[in-house]
Image (cartoon, rainbow, N blue to C red; front, top):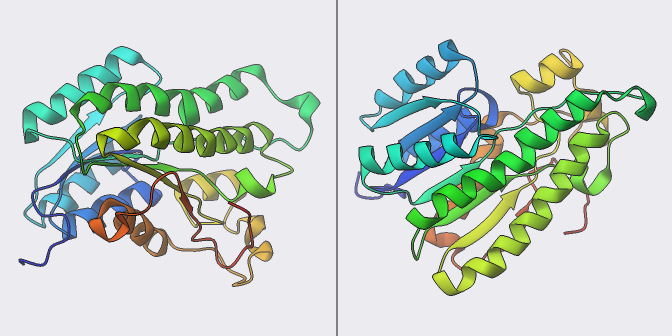
Length: 250
């Protein structure tokens, strides 16, 4: 038990009621962290995840809300600190996507929802949480291989993921004097409830991966753990690519 990598740490994770976020939350809990989860709407999934985390003997709170609302972000940060006394790790993982194969058919509402969820909410929550972070803290953002490759059906989504890469690099530069590291993870095709909802049982991008299969969420989560620990002390402003062997630049 003394070898737990995140003992006495607190991690705030968005979109952790399912998918990659849940896998991260469970892995971090196994490594000793207290977990705070922000989720948007699925009460059942959030409560189930909370129970699984509590079973490890860790603290866990769940907070329902919209990270596109500045007041909610500030309230969430305060609630985590009131409960656990600290925030050591912020994982900006929440996101949404709406595929469309013709730009002329893109709906304004969908475009704004995608940007609000994927990048604007990320910036607002980071702004709200940053005052609680200190030297040794870590921010980890979820981007995607499509930020580098593009995607013929996910124009607005891919654009937000590219913005996340730039935001990560810029915040890392600003954070260096404070000893806070800011990095990102860019998964390739991953089997999640979101991709299943979007593309069906078989995400069509899997053929583009040299491994010829979607990753599981459990295979992606260790990249976040690495970036959250002192093992990655020399890494900031960077992106890890657990993508099955897809060659990308950056």
